[in-house]
Length: 142
Image 1 (cartoon, one colour):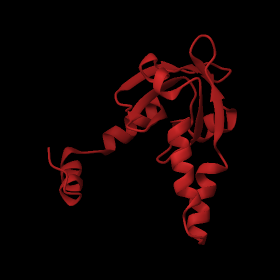
Image 2: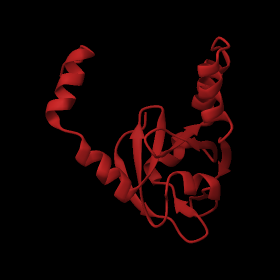
Image 3: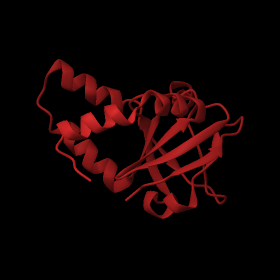
C-alpha cells in the first residue's frame, strides 16, 4: 500500500527519482497516466490491469467512453533506470504542469505525482471542517 509524501525535483529532460519507499511496489516498469485534480497517476502493473479491467467492463455510454479515453489514451509505460529515475513523457509533464519541484503522494493502490506549488494550493483549499463533513457523509469514523 502506498502512503506518505516525498518531495523531489524533475530535471529539464523530464527525469525524476522515484522515492525509494515506492520503488519495490511500483516495480521496474509501471504505468503513468493523467490523473484527476491536475496530477499524474502512477500505477504498478497489477493495479493498472485491475483498473483497466474496470474501465473495460463499463457499459457503453458517452460518459463511460469519455472516462475510458481520459485514462487510457494518456497512459504510458515507463521504466526505472539504474539511478531509480523515470522519464516522465513530455505530454504528461505539460498536463500536470511539472517543471522543477514535484511531490509524490501515496494513495493506497497508486502514487500521485504533483507539481509542488499546485499541491500546495490544493492543500490550502481543504479545510478540516469540510473534511469532517465529507467523512460524516461517507460514514467514516476515526
